[in-house]
Image (cartoon, rainbow, N blue to C red; front, side, top):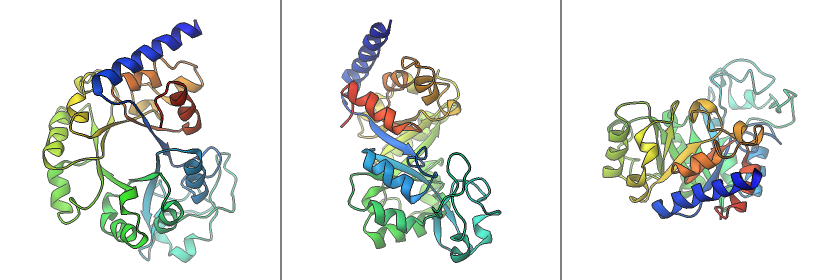
Length: 287
């Protein structure tokens, strides 16, 4: 039975790559290696980079005195031993809190700045996916310029090309950018085509609650323009249940990672980067 599933997996993968003309899948570590270090910590990003991932994902926030920090939530309650919003504190004040690990225990790790992360990863063969960055593009751009890491960063947002151009007209042609597209929206394909007509996106991050979108069935119009197809395996709500848990805890690769690859994924963002790399290497789909 296991052999049959493996053969099915390889056939699905081969089918996709012959059609799309691509032969590798990039791995993005969601909030770094958060299973071995606190999420969005400097240590989590270093661990992920050392693991060999292609991309680390992080989330931007801002302190009261304007320092760009790494924080996913609207508050620091869940991830630290502090309370309130990042904007309630100066940078000096917020650094007094410790980040919690996956068990909820407070660690010596502190909330890092974007500058610290980029300096730590500068020169490494890893890119940085700037989630929740749309309000802070100008500040982030300045930090990337200062640290010499602009080419390592991926800006992203769930907006149309027209909205992006209107808000950041001077940055559109200077940054590496990835649109986020909700495939449940009727205008999803038009959003993608507008970007392809006006710029060269790094990828399209495509989220879907149902797996019936025609774009999933055929996204060659994206890859032939040089853009990648970014699919998320981390939460079932982002991929109609074709997720990490199905693969690792359920032992069902056919309906999880195999499925994502067969439906065009050339980048997969995962909460299981170590296992994902091992899986892809076994199928000769990794760098």
